[in-house]
Length: 76
Image (tube, rainbow, N blue to C red):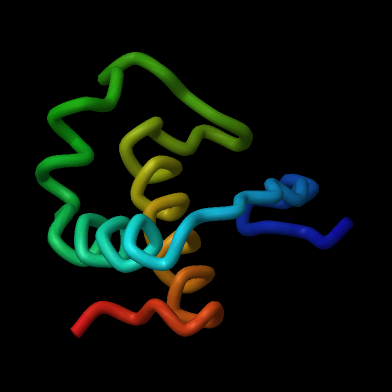
């Protein structure tokens, strides 16, 4: 397993999606912005070495976006 930002060990998350769902998910994560993620994050949750939940969520959204792009589902 590889290291992620913050020194956390990464875990594989297998996900199989039909092409339409992958395309739609790529569009969704393209449109989600930091402020939206911040609205849904707990203001008191802290991860790892003092990282706010919002920042960890935002990194995850960007990793998902990158993974979809690598699989050929880059948003237009």
